[in-house]
Length: 633
Image (tube, rainbow, N blue to C red; front, side, top):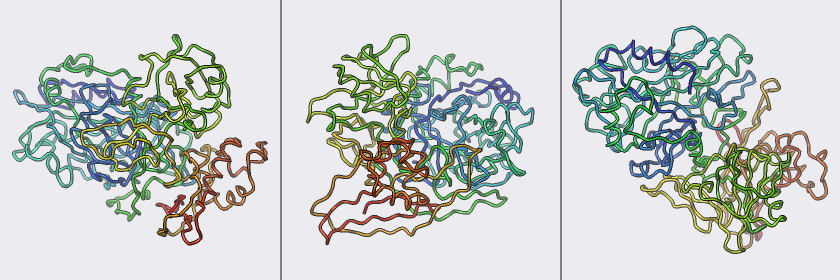
């Protein structure tokens, strides 16, 4: 995953005095989700800052070992490991104050993310090393730290600036890294043998006695030596080499840390413990290659990248944003970062990744299947256009007499009457259909070798494939068979739904973002007082529009645009204003699409009709740093 594996391996070997240099290195080619969740620190709730999360699909706001073990897939390559691993997301902080996530090297589109996890046998001669027990969890690092404190825990956080020919540092280096900035975190390996967790999620663990954070005998109070784990994330900071300004480096972690000393990581064990113990005992090669460990089996990179989870926190986490998610002002120490009061953000129904056509066209979403350029899944008629949408593809296939429609690579549409089992969506696997449709950025049209598949169905029996998240008590707003609420032994659930989730019943992601670094201008947001007004149930209501979370919705509900958009939307209809010239420039994120603008206007202007005494009201509720969210109450 990184360009300098040999350097790291040699560095570890020469810096450790253990009698063995055995280790295996597990790649996580994909991320499950990028989200404000942390089932260790904030179980059952939205966490304080944004994480990039890898591992088993049993991950959720709350977690148990059984839940982790029942995952259907993992974004990391070892099949016997359904553990979860997460770190704070790194952002580029632009001169105008806006932020954008920094992708990892090799993932320029920032779609898959990922990390590498090392398992190292770092014991003394003859010492028994142990696998993590069932239910075990821990964290390393301190999100509030803003200077180098000198202890082993501080030494365990460091950064390698690849291509700069400079030594590793414990904070962010103040110079560009041509090969990327590699964040490195070594976890403590000495356990007290009693507690699977502790109040601060660290006190049940210790670094070795002595002067080395990564090797040595365990202290007497922590007598059980576990296998060591080491996180590595290689950020493509070189992509921003021409965008530095001022006298300091421009990167900041999601927890508001511009120093790097607050880098940290979390681990929840989801291993088959017996298999991990065999790997610790028998996988003694010093190559680091998982293929040299015959105790485990592996997924392919594409299988890892297909292992995804829908978002259950309704906020923007990708692209340009005017503030870090949550309440995380940028701080640079030297004292610890203060805890910033923040309004509670509720968990949301899982985000949908399909267009509901069950009523309008009697087609259902089957899921995300696979395709191959040399052996196409669908071999009937096809077309490729720059204005592709789900509706356009389904209409094309339907009009030509086909019962399956598959969308791929944003603009391609394929038809057929059969779907092979080999290419069909896998049970419990959400898939890597991550590309936005070329004709509507609010819709998903497959991915690279990934098909968003729709199927003709009989009216009244159509059911979309919908995905839920374990440990989340929310359910789709409209579902014939709702996703189960918290079920300890369940992982990602496939539920049947008669219509897509109605997103307008919960806050819509808001954002005011520049389209590029070069054109970035100063951003501002109008702060509103959060108001909740209880209302009686209306005797009659209008049908709520379906409001997907897309860039157009994000823009039209941003407080800097809403007042202008409200005036515009009162008179705009796509049937009358079919020309793109009728779309104002302040709705640039709507891609000059009358269909998209009309849908966004419907969401902005929607207010249920009701009897005068039980009238529903619309409010703009303050969210974090002044971003306003549309809320129906």
